[in-house]
Image (cartoon, rainbow, N blue to C red; front, side):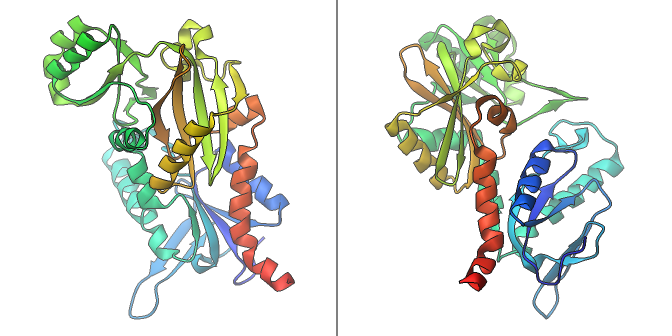
Length: 332
């Protein structure tokens, strides 16, 4: 049904189908919070008027136009939905043009909703996704990180083998090999690094010491709330190097982070300027926890469903607090 004029709502920027969007919007509805999902792959329209008067913008998802000035919160849930939207994805010229234009408009939404609480701030979200920056900041804050070489010099990579028996490679970006294959973390070997000198020179990558793991952690942070999940990745050969190869296997359990690691992680989360993010750690057989990376838009339902960690509730609480703030004032 159309919303009443001026009614505050939560804007979700994403696309259907997305079980995360459905779960969050259903939970918001139970709290009496209206949501609008701007889906670039649907029939939705968005328009902005920028002239001598104050900028105005509106979105229409089928029930009539709604002013973006009434958006109390915006949840950035944009995920690549078709191959052309992935780095390395395929698509014809029309599809590439369409996505290029949508990226420009969606990336400007924060300027059109200055009154809204964003999860996450777009500029911070994009900066936080840079893996090199994550590692530098994590190390500065005292978190342990792997011995790492990032770049396109194979001699520097070979030096890693002087310090460590085993080395892994992973990409700097989330790259798709058309049509739907991603590049997982893989172990590499010194002879291959020698033979691949020219390929390495063409495309920099991340090379790190291979850490002998006891288990891994996916730690989701919402605001200042920390939800840690243990991943028993070493119990199956398929998930030893990269647990995403079989991520729906039964291998998850709740975990309590040591106070010092939690404190440093929250400091990193704050310095990255994020409200929501998922962090990956490995835990050595010695017990040392080593930071790997941060995903500012990481999935969480597979963790929540397996461990009962109330991550959805935390996110919904913060989004609804923004939307209901004016109603609380009226009731007082």
